[in-house]
Every structure is written in structure tokens, then in C-alpha cells.
Image (tube, rainbow, N blue to C red):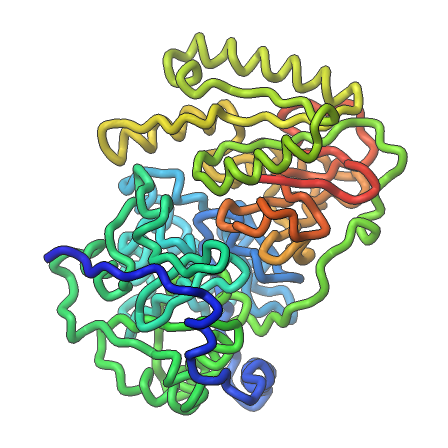
Length: 495
């Protein structure tokens, strides 16, 4: 059966026609539940993140890029911790390798939990445009941690313009809500799909696995009119081995859902999660705070080097962001392009291309000029999903990561970082000051990744121009692996 098709909707009037948001601040209910000392020790929320953008709505939370048992035990024993992120970068792997990786991570988490006597809950944090290894990763996690009452599918992410209304997932494009299957994200050569309705999406991604009567919804009407009690009642009544779709069109909707979820858990219900960033921060009890300003980062002035900007994504939004960057910076920006066809033609050609870019980038950076290293904009795909992923891997080897994950783990040697906050809405900033970091000892080192799901960036709405990168402090020995030196009075970063 062909997936159902949906019309593009006017954003303002569509959202205005929804019921009024729930009048009580559900975050207070969440906080009381998480802080209730009379209840048994709460489980740590472990978010297995297939890309660094999962921290888009968090602050004061730890990110690990390693998952050995001693490291996990140490983190599980830290007082006051409610959870952490583990960066898996699984979206860069073919299914067989992704399955092995997620199983290894889950088994180590389970062993660390047993060693410390700490309960854990697992979130598979995935792309809010529905790209990634689903249901593979969820199946693997369940095989390690045991059956749950239901899976929760919640891709909503307000800052990225991702809304779920009547079970249909939309991407905000200007003043319109576009059904997600009608966007370039759904045409992804590796993780493409045809369904905007999440019920259809589940059936498409897991053919033959689920019957329609196993898929349930928590609607916006449930959330806004019934509040946490209604949500809890629906979750408690779910039959075993079902999937529940979370509808949400405002941050308060996710707050109400999580407050109801916690009530259901207090009655013994267990869940496994496949979600966007908004669920994770809400479930951790993280409240939003003011954006991190450039002055808070103590950027040195005058700066001694240029800022390095790395862009590998090929989707139209990234191209639009780059156009704005190039137009605005003009002669103050050196633009170096890596030709993808050259990178994938042979190892020798790729090595020669990278060597040229490295030499020129270092020259420009040491002269104090901001430098953009970008892949050619022509999209090149293989004959199938695996061959397309292989092309991406070759590009990643040259550029620093098929996602921004490799730039963090391989280029910067980050093993543990603290999410400081956001440089702009939905743009996470990490502080990587542990001993394994490539630039340990540099004042205020930080890594920033800007997702290409941030349409606003191309319109210049924020205090920062956002670039994937790292603020380096006072350093002159900068090469292409060091992703962003100090910039002008205000930090300028892009993706």
C-alpha cells in the first residue's frame, strides 16, 4: 500500500487552530518527580546519540565519546547525575556495523549498571527528520535490556522546526509546514523514506513487524486538554509490545508528555525511546537558559589566527547557509573546495587533494584569514544505500566526519565533554577540557556543531553565524584538524 500523502500547511494558522497549550508548567511536575527523595533511586537516562546534535537543547550534561566499562562506572557514580550522552556516530555506519556497535555500547552500559547498582533507561536519540537506523537500534537495545511495555517515538524538536500533528511529522519551511516525506531529508540516499505519517513510517521501516492495532498515539488534544494525567492513563493502558507516537507542536507539549510518562513509570511501566533532542532534555529535567554569549567565552583579542569552518553536508539548507556565509564575509573569507569526485576516484587522488587543501588552509589560517573548507555541492550517490554510505565514508576520511562526530572524536581526541549550553537556539556548545583532548590547556576550548536542520541560520537571525568548529584560544600551530580558532569580538561559527 502506498504511503498517504499530505498537503503543505500554513504554519501560523495551523498552529493557531490547535487547542490552547496546557496552562500549568509541567516542568515543575517533572522536577518534583525527579527530586522526590521518598521514591526509589531513579534510573539514569542514557542517550545513545547517533550524531552530536542530540545535545541541541541541553546544558550541564556530560557527553562521552567512549564507552568502556571503567569510564561508565565512574560516570554512573558521580553524585547528582541524572544521565548522560554517549556519542555513537552510528548513522555513519552500515547496518551490520551499527548493530555491533550499539550492542557493544548497550552491553557495557548494562555491565556498568550492574557494577554500580544503578538503574538505567535507554534513549536512541536520532535525527528529527527521521533518518537513521530504525528500528534496528531499538531492537538491539531491547535485546540487551529486556522487553519493555512500549516503544516511544517522539521526533518533535521545536528549535529545528519539527512538529508532529495528527501523527504527521512536518518540517517548518519559512511560513509553511511541509510533510517530512516531501523534503530533501526523505530523499537521503542511505536513510530515505516515503511516509510523513508516523504510523506509515513505522510500517515502512519495519515491514511485517507491527499490526496497525499495535500503534497508538498521544495526541495534542490528549496533552493540552487532559494534561499529564491523561497521558499517564493512556500509557498505562497500552498493551505490551506496542509503539506510541508522541504528537507535539510546542515545547510545553513535550513537558506535559514527560510528566505523564513519569507518572506511568511510577506505576511500573517500562519504555524504550526513539526520539529527537527535545525529549531527552525534558526527561532530564533540563530547563532552557540564556544563550552562551561570546563575552562569556573570554575570546582573546586581538586574535592571532583565522577561524576554520568545515562543511560536508550536501543538503539544500547547508548550501543555503554557506551561500549566506560566503556573501556576508566576502573578501574576508577564504573558500577552499574539496572535489568529491576527486576524493572518491582513488586513494592517491584523495591524498593529493587533501594535501593541497591542508597546505592552503594552514597558510590562510596563519595569515589571520577565516577559512571555509567545503565539499563540492554536487550530490554524488551510489547504486544503493550501502554504496552511497561508502562514498560518504570516503569523504569523511578527508573532511573529518560523515557527521560532525569524527571531527570531535578523531580530530580533537575528545573523550568526555560538558555541554555548556547553546550558542544559538538548537546549536550546542561543548567544553572539552579533559586530559585526552587535542587542545587541553587552551583557554576555554569549545566544540560547536550546527545542524543543517536549522533553517533560521540561512536567514541570519542569531547573534552568531554558526559553523561546526572548535574555539582554540591563543594558538598559532593550527592545522586542518583543529576545527575553529578564535574569531573576532563575537565568535563566528557555521556548519
